[in-house]
Image 1 (cartoon, rainbow, N blue to C red):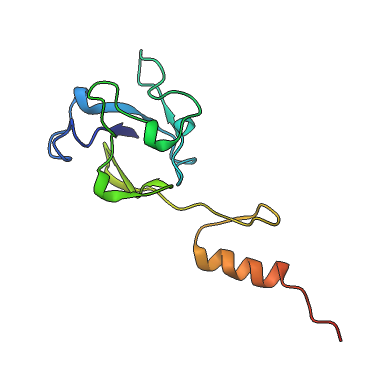
Image 2 (cartoon, rainbow, N blue to C red; image 1 turned 90 degrees about the horizontal axis):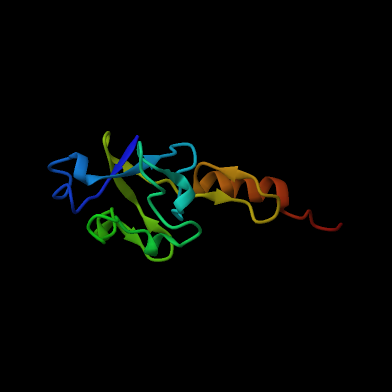
Amino acid sequence: MILHCWYCSLGGERLSEDSKVATVDEQRLQRPVTPDMFGPLNGTGAPFMEGVEWRYMKHMACGKYPWPQAAVVPGDGPLKILTDKGFVDVPDKFECEVCGWVGKTGPALKCHMTLKHTEEPNG
């Protein structure tokens, strides 16, 4: 899957070679977005500086964020990105702070916390 710049593609209306930013590692894609979730296109270098936060990840061709700013959660990054498959939702990461278990939804994490980490009352 290829990440396209929302601005360079005129809001997703016209995908082109110029709007291509990076390859997307679909297995690792989650919020908060990090540079290691994206790879170089054929014959290009890394699309983003290594180790930076999502707010410093800009398209080198235009200097803007490659995702629509209306779809950004402060601190976590974009809710969706534009790809060659259309707009793709960027899932939340629901990780247990106690044991590291990762769930797919907030309710699944809450259930995990209740069943695995609730102390039984003394008695």
